Amino acid sequence: MNIHEYQAKEILKGYGVNVPAGYLATTPDEAVEAAKKLTEETGSEGWVVKAQVHAGGRGKGGGVKFAPSYDKLREKAEEIIGMQLVTPQTSAEGKKVHQVLIQQDVYYPGESEPNEIYMSVLLDRATGRHMIMYSTEGGMDIEEVAEKTPHLIFKEEVDPKVGLQGFQARKVAFNLGLEGKAFKGMVKFVSALYSAFLGSDSEMFEINPVLQTSDDQIMAVDAKVSIDENALYRHPDLAALRDTREEDPTEVEASEAGLNYVKLDGNVGCMVNGAGLAMATMDMIKLSGGDPANFLDVGGKANAQTVEAGFRIILKDPNVKAILINVFGGIVRCDRVANGVVEAYKNIGNINVPIIVRLQGTNAVEAAKIIDESGLKVTSAITLKEAAEKVKAALA
Image (cartoon, rainbow, N blue to C red; front, side, top):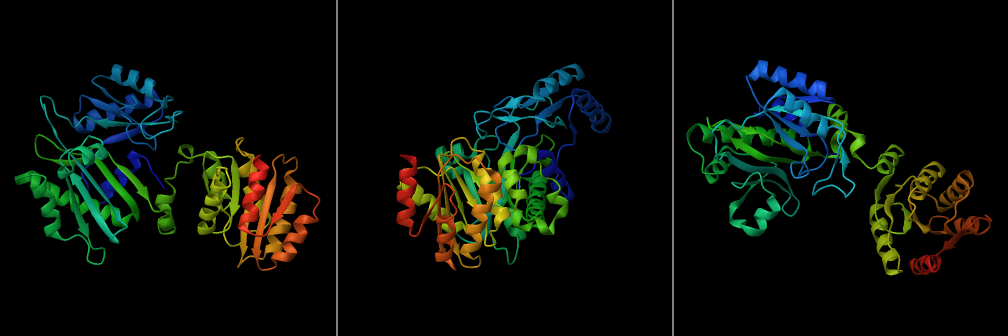
């Protein structure tokens, strides 16, 4: 689950990470009031207006602006709030900006070349360990740094059984070329950042940039965080941070129905039980000459309600020319799924795309009979090959 920058910074602050002061605003008036509060609290005479959307590269799309006065701040807030922000990490349509973060300016006057550092904490699936990745080339696309100057990227593996050790945090600070107060500040920063990563059960914490100010403070100027959805049951406070406005509406609907759904760009909708079988089904669709329009896993307890919800979600995609249902009856009985398909078909009505149903496993024969005798525009299949051929024929 992705969260906004301002939310990520609240998490970081709770673990002792130094972050710039800032307030959320949803209107230009609120933005000006936020700036006045920051001036009172920090003495800041300049502010940064930052669009809050789930995407990186906001500055490149015009979603991050500096304002040296209240009038300019209002002007920048009016420009950003409500805009469709297009960045290298969004679709061509972009994302609508509903709110902005008004943040104190931490780049001090006269500071010509501030020291910006890249740092992230994530799981290295190849080793099963956590990894701190960092570079002196902060503020840039880390992919570009990795391609052109890979020697400037450092990695520190952390064994989750023992956690981050003091010598490792010091090694990070040393490799970044820091000294004195900045060195000590970075050691503290790295330790606090790793604690935040662990404590929130996150998949990734990315800080770009980490700033060394001219008076040697170390702070997280930006923050991009993704939390492991499988761990949200332990963090109801973090689950409440979800902003469904930033997600695909169809995927939100599927989530509420208990379905695992990801929209794709193809022409064959698929409904499957089990992630592995879903991937194999998508391959089969591709080999049959089609393209999968979605990944949809109804889980091991498919019934009439989940099947109907799956149908409705798939049919919202105007590109779908056929639907393939591929279910292996292990936990769930095939005849129950077949009855669910028939019931869902009748409830929805007016389905104008061919539907191929392959049911194998417990009570598969009975299921095929239910489908074939339903009188509906539904075709049964027994083998994967047969299902592929029927998908191909449906697309012809």
